[in-house]
Image 1 (cartoon, each protein chain N blue to C red):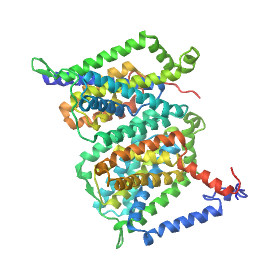
Image 2: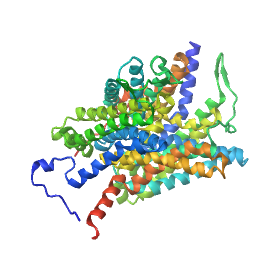
Image 3: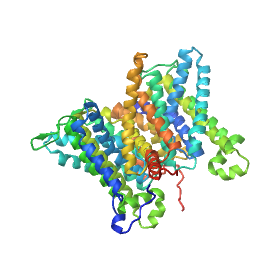
Image 4: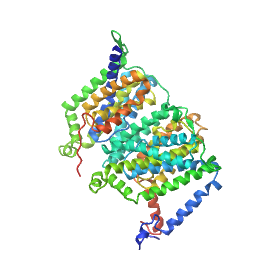
Length: 346
Length: 290
């Protein structure tokens, strides 16, 4: 039974994972995860890769929306910006370790432009501004043939380092989870810095934050830029993973998907982003399995898959907002508490 | 020159329906403080109800419209009761996301039931075009504008002269005082949602019966965001004036720059307004206090 943590030094309080047990669990998780390509099946591996990309993107949206309270509906389009940047750079022979950060930075720049209205308006107005930005960006994806390949889409050469090419899910896995791990720890660390605390202050009461000396404009733009950076990297990873992309992928439903992932997982926590991304990836997959199982009796049900997925995303958003506003992360912490306090009840 | 006049007339007249959608949106924002992202989907669902009643059950258009309105009103009440009331007191962002969720549910549900095909429901209004010299105005555009104008005028009268309308305005401007004066806040909120959904449905049916019915109909509400932002979110007059203005700009852009620009012009307008004049032309500037 563990009831609390007693910090004896400041150093122990500043640790990322303060308890030895947590560190051991994290190590086990990391070992299991990074050895997965050695023992996992093809289907499992492909799904885990997609989950990894979604985790990166959700981490970003959770910084913008969960930590800072700025609702963004252009996150799906930001992924597109990252993806097309990587495609353009990769065709010119730029290696992935330059192209991915470059995609992130360019997307961050666009994020700042989209976030600009946030200095004059907030909340609902901002949601409309980002919605407008989404439609403008997807319009560009469809029309700017020279870079995006227009509606037919474009291809992305595989990432490679030396003679090692990231071909197939097993190799892409390391690329994706290398990035995901780095970015997740970065997000976790961000919350402990001045910038991260300023984000939370702006979310909770922006005027009070300003009186306390937080530069509102700078903080909001930073939140947009960092969230967009994550989206850009996720988009780049998506490009390397699929090898080809069309503008069809970056529809508004994708933005709603990430919003749902953030809400379902838990606003403002890294754990929430991870849980939300994992959960939301498996929802359409579970639907697909259900449809496959029932197509025996209802042959036309396969066509309903996409619209049903959309309806389920919406339903999940509403159910979690009404019944569990802190998401899966809150459920997880309740479960942990029960385990820690066993045999006593909370 | 006559080209310019034709584009302008078409644009302003088609702005009438936009004004109706904008009204549906502003009613809710003014009355309950919620930004309803599901306006387009509600509109689409209403139009599908109308289509189902006319074509599938063979009812005359007017009866079908009435049935569609009743169906939408019931759904609006249910949404208000089941989703929004538990969320009251939550930050506006949470409520906003709930409406996005609702939009997603309706969109998915409609596509699952009716598919992505385009249907053409029977026209509600006569289709004789109007011809001045060499300018041709399609009858549907004119009829839609007339219906929208009558409905909007009716709403103005309702809010000004009836006691229910005045009660709704009182609730919108100060719920606490309104409650002490004996106005039932819950039923006022419910009525606001019903009115907004009904207006949206009429707009949806008008668009569907003149331009065809498909899930893309919901996207029509997207350009309405340009209008309400330009007019100021909380001003009904602003929304109407801005809708006509946006309709005009859209028609000119589509006429001179090509049809594709219609996809993007409203959104560029939104971003520009939000950066330079976020409260629109008629919106009230809010001062925030701690």
